[in-house]
Length: 118
Image 1 (cartoon, rainbow, N blue to C red):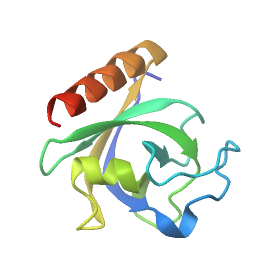
Image 2: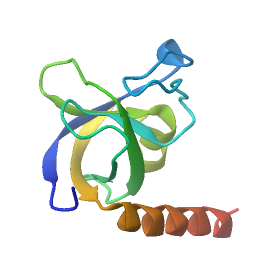
Image 3: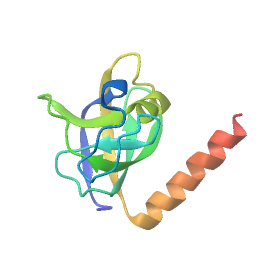
Image 4: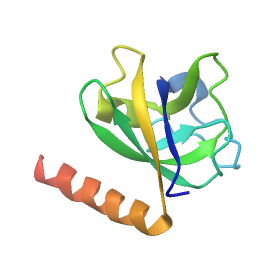
């Protein structure tokens, strides 16, 4: 998983899907850091980098999609907000696969960084 790399267009989904079941059986929560990908293992983690501003977020793959041609990832509203995709709706991203250990470290760093900015 940690050797996975992909670049392409990402979009986001939110309120219309909030509370629905995801492909791995969880309820979709638009305020959690999750994403949908066509082939990555469910419950795996990836780092998503917005190529236009360099902002990044670590998300859990818990659903399948996107189903719109030309897109490689659907982010939750919360994840899209962190990397600045909400207003535009879509954007070019780089996806980097993470091992479970890398994901834990990256998410801990995100939490620490967020608490320092508040």
